[in-house]
Image (cartoon, rainbow, N blue to C red; front, top):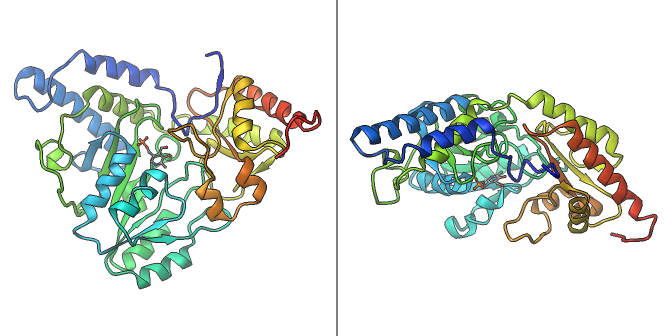
Length: 369
Ligand code: PLP
């Protein structure tokens, strides 16, 4: 690679083991719903992948519903819960995949605030739960994509269960980075994305707790036990399964890289004292706005993001940093570096060198925030 890739939260490069599993699956080219030998071979491969995904989160394979990614899984969870839940509460830092969908899908949803460290405010969530029509569906992500802050899901679950509610946990950024156990989290619905964990893009899963309500909303073929009709993408799920098998095997090495960056960066690190993913660093270079800084990093051969990655390439104000009441400097300048299985010390060297150059630009009078 000619560049230092420090943007694993936007998408982790495909792991070689996932690419191999995909190549094997592509060679099969049969519909897994077909009853003939070729179809059965495709189904076997898909069911092996389902076991691998289930094992990564401590679930039963029959409770893994393959989707096209975390976005679809989040939307599917809202539909699944619709018959059982009378209200929706989501945290102020949920990903756009959910937050932008909710005003259309579930008007009148309530928003739970977060602390300055980017952790969901449990007291405020408790009050919202008291007021909301019951049972409520509560959506709190396991780890935030911008800050990496890990949410106290077991404590959220205790509040939700006290009121007979359901819990939706977006674990898209957690998979492959920290251990996940659906029972320990006490989540009703758990959402996963393949490409954040070194699997291919366009694959993900909605994982259900035993007995989770599931209102089947869509017609169509009976795939995924009728819960998500449409022929499954066998190659993508095979790659997803292979990536899950490797989940969090690099966490200690990745944490050491991230920690070295933060020790040597000499800039404000956002939410540094909160429990965070081992791979994520959100920092604020003092003299450049984030959109300019990202270009400067890119010119130096380093791939990073300005807060959340945007499909349009436009940089918007971060809802997450706003909800946290982050400093004005953080809100305009925050840049995210995120590491993963392919990251090396050379990537951190390049990131630090580029940051030093950017910090020097103020002295040269090039740009001010
Ligand atoms: N949830 C979180 C926390 C994410 O970071 C992302 C992707 O950035 C998504 C959901 C959407 O995932 P996908 O690209 O698989 O639809």
